[in-house]
Amino acid sequence: MKFNTQTISAIQQLLAADFEQQLGRGAIRPDEIEQALRDGLQEVGQKSYGEMLSMLDEHSYLVEERCECEQIGKRVSRREAQVLTVFGWAQYKRSYYHCRNCGRRWIPLDESQHLRPGRSTRLMSSLLGIAGVSVAFEEAGQQIWRYLQVEVSPNTIRQETQGLGERQARQERIWQERSQDLGYLQQREQAPERPKRCYGSLDGVFVPIEQEWKEAKLISWYQAGERYPRKEQHAQAIYHYPSLEDAATFGELVWATAVKHQVDQAQELIFVCDGAAWIWKLVEHYFPQAVQIVDWYHACQYLYPVAEALFDPPEQQAAWVTEMKAFLWEGDVESVIKTAKKLLPRAGPPAERLVTYYTNNQERMRYAAFRAAGYLIGSGTVESGCKQVVGLRLKRCGATWSHAGASATAKARAAWLSGSWDSLLDLPWAA
Ligand SMILES: [Zn+2]
Image 1 (cartoon, rainbow, N blue to C red):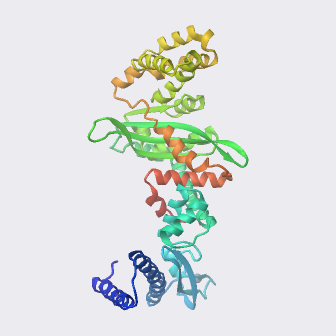
Image 2: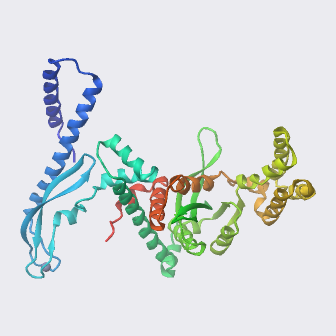
Image 3: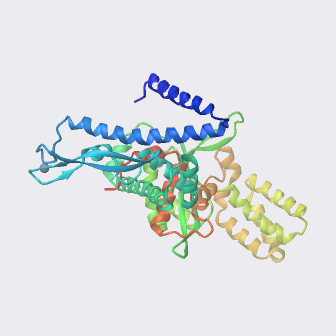
């Protein structure tokens, strides 16, 4: 719906006339005008919204209301309620029905319009959620106050944000059931569109939960695209799914989201990850056909401590790292391992760690071949993904999380960062 241009224009003229009168009494600054307009329009919004909801209810009263048992219901009263809108709390009245046949009582307006008395509207819920996934709940409350001039407690923001995360979790459970349903998977196999080349990255980050550090795990699915105007490849259409569960349960989520995004059917599937053992185990179990690549960024991280152990001057450290990186880049991981082995007596544990890691991951570090095939070899996608999705929001100083709260907040944040916020808002509320 849209309001009539003449109505808007009439309101504008009324405000202008009011302004003109006040202007006669003394100087007014532009920012006073802006604030007064903001206050006034907010009040108009708040009152109009409530009134219009009541009108919706009156209007639907003209149609007879049937109970679930098919009996015609009787309107017994009209009761007041309030919902939190972007203008603040709005009061409205709606009809309360009773069924003489089965004794059921219900409020058709609230039920049919998904209104939640005492809670936020869909739009307000979306805004509170965006603030809640972005910053600490206290700060989110201050931001909402600044943006909307509506006072919302940190607790309400927590509730809304985590409510959205719980909805996401329910959605994931449905995907999970489907992904284990052989009938569903077979029927899906006839789907004509197979994605060409898909990427997956897995990572973990430790977050403080119930006075302990627990590992949050993340799967990110993405595809490669070219960035304009330079034709360099970068990750796009990125979907993040975090989990606080153990590796096996997380594996089920990885599989479920793979099925959801048809990643398992891709002509080519490439995993770019850090080298943690649980990650490759999971990849091998669910996607034995996939190409495995150790993230270029992670691989290079092993060089710096060795360089620091060998040389004092930073220039010499940098020169050595550059030399080793060149070997890696050309796919000659063996030369780096050989060099590090020779340096063992001088460089000690850092060289030892490098030798172990590179030896275990040799086949996943064929960077020349990967580059020739046109693969992304490590954009740091999941590195920044885990930091962005989980770390930045959950690892704040002094933050203490419950398991359920951390999980729901991370899931809501992932939906926001994956661009699936609006579809999350369309999911049904908790029963
Ligand atoms: Zn009934």
